[in-house]
Image (cartoon, rainbow over all chains, first blue to last red; front, side, top):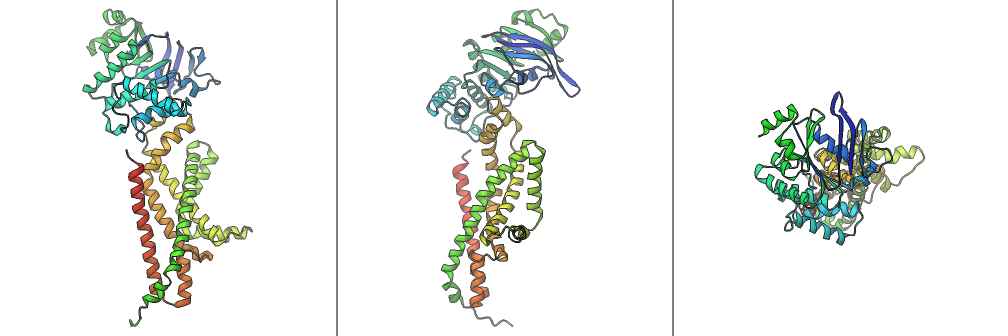
Length: 240
Length: 221
C-alpha cells in the first residue's frame, strides 16, 4: 500500500504539490491526469524518493520513503518507475539492459537474471531483440524495454510517468497495450498520462491534478461521466 | 655549403639498440597511460563528489598539468622532488612526470565526455536501485570512456612523444636517450635522429590504427 499524506513540495518559490493525500491499495490502478505543471510527475518522483519533499509523508508498505533511516536503494527495488524519456542504456544490448540491475543490485546469478530478462522481454514483445543495441530500436520498443527492465526487478509497484508522451503517435498503441496487460495481471500501478481513453479503460480510480492540488478523484465512469470540479470540466472539454 | 656525406649504414647498424630503446619508450607510455587513466577516473570522481577539498585537488591538478610545460612537470618530478630529498631514478621521474600530465589532460577530456551523457541516465540507474557509485561505474563510466576514447588515443601518442623529454633528467635507455648517446659516439647526427623520427612515427601510427581496431571491437553500439 502506498500512503501519501499531506505532501508538500516546492521548487524555489514555486509550490508544485500543495498538500496531496492519496492512498493506493495493492492491486489498484490509479491514473493521474491534469495539465502540465500540475505536479503529477513530481509526485511520482517523490514516491520513489528521487525527489525530496518539504512536508507530509509518503509511506510504502510501512516504510516512510523520506525518513533519514530509509535505505532508498533498497526501497527503489520494490518500486519500478518508467519515465517519459525511455533512458535505455546505450552501451548495453537489450538483454544486458534488463539483466544489469538484477545482477548488480539484486545479486541474482547471471543465468537467473538472463532467464528473468528473457521472460520479461518476451512479455513486452521484444523476445526477438535480445542481442540488439537500443539504438536499433524504435522509441516504442525502447519504452517497452524500459518497462521490461523495471519489471525484471520484481517490483511490488510500478509508476509510469507519461510514458507515451515522447513517442510518435503510431507507437503509442504498443506501449499502452503493454500497460493494459500489466493492469489486467493485477500489477499495482500509478500512471501519469495524457491518454484519456486509456485512463478510462484501465483505472480503478482517476485523479485530476490542478495547480498542485488533487482537485478530484473518482472511479473513471464517475470522473469522466459526471465531473464535479469546474477545472476538471474545463480540462475534459478541452481534451475531448 | 652542403658537403655532408650520408652514412646510413652506420646508423642502421645501431638499429637494434634503438629498437630496444623504442621498447622502453613504449613501456613508459603504456604505464603512464594506464596509471593516468586510473588517476583521471579518480580525479573525475573527486570533481563529481561535491566535496570542496576533493574537487579543489582535482581542479589544481588539471590546471597545473594543462597550463605548464610538460618539461617543467618532468623537472619537478626529478629535481623538484630531489630538493626535498626524494631522489627518483630517471625512469621513475619521466614516468611520474608524464603520468601527471596524462592524468590532468584525461580528467579534462572526461569532463567533456560527461557533459555528453544525459543526467537522465543516472536517474534511470538510481531508480533501478543503483547507488551513486554503482550508477557511475556501470552506466556513466563505460559511456564516458567511449566518448573520450579518441582524445585518449591522442594522449597516448602525446605520451610516446613526451618520453623524448627524458634526456633532460638523465634518461638514456629510451628511444630518444639511446639515439642521443649513439650520436655522441658516432656523430651521425642526421641519420640517427632521422631514423629515430621514423621509429617514433611508426609507433604512433601503430597506436592510432590499433586504437581504431579496439574501438571497432569494443564499441559495437
